[in-house]
Length: 84
Image 1 (cartoon, helix red, strand yellow):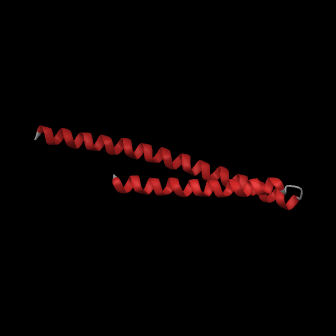
Image 2 (cartoon, helix red, strand yellow):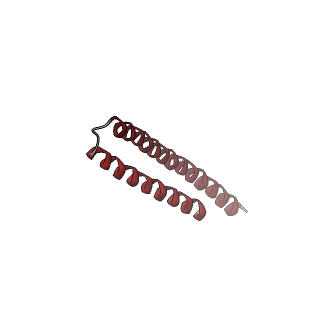
Image 3 (tube, one colour):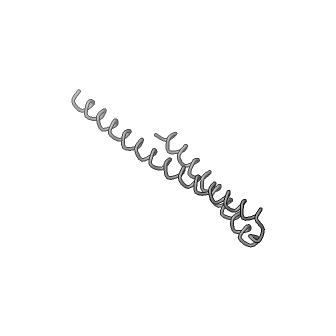
């Protein structure tokens, strides 16, 4: 469980860093959004940011499901140990 938690924390940190970096780039592009090239880049970055946020939500949901399953397995094992 500790390795799962650590891996999820690393994933969350990485996604957070990506989110902040993309947000900063979008803010810089907003200041220079006068050209078609900048607009295309801004749209691409917004799509990339949305995909990163979606991946983060999916990872969090998978982690929640894995934790529920792990907790259930631990409870079953504790029940078996108490019976034995």
